[in-house]
Length: 199
Image 1: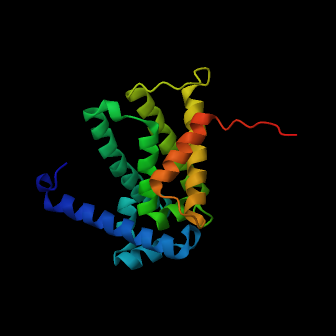
Image 2: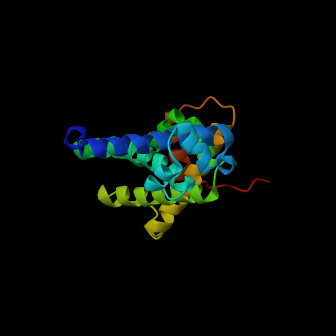
Image 3: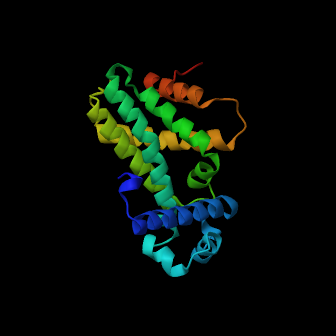
């Protein structure tokens, strides 16, 4: 819905929600998810506690709201480009978009997937990614080479590995760019991580 088609009340409601999301993001990055209270959030946003509950059920929903909005925004452009240029569709490009988004929002991803976050939130992120991968594979008719493995299992494997690799990449000193990480991740999946016994 375009901003000009919204009335004053709707615009104010959107602004207030974004204020709460921004305050939540800042506090979670500063203190870690567990140590942030709803009172902290409303104090930072300079809003009343009742206003918070008009928008969110709890702090987890507030964090998830801003995470989901960010992932949906990042996901929209590649989908549009893929529809216009179907020859450019590939999982490696999808991985690159995710690594770029993680790079642009390092603090939030570190909290979201690291020890300062919430296991429930991590699960929600993984569920969203798995569902998104499944939709993309079906929408763009991508065919996995290991056909006997059901797609829902493939997407769970990809998602689990991807979120763990992102967490490692953000929390360790390394020189890999987002595109390099995407290429290496895709190569590892494509090669199937086969090992040979030596000796």
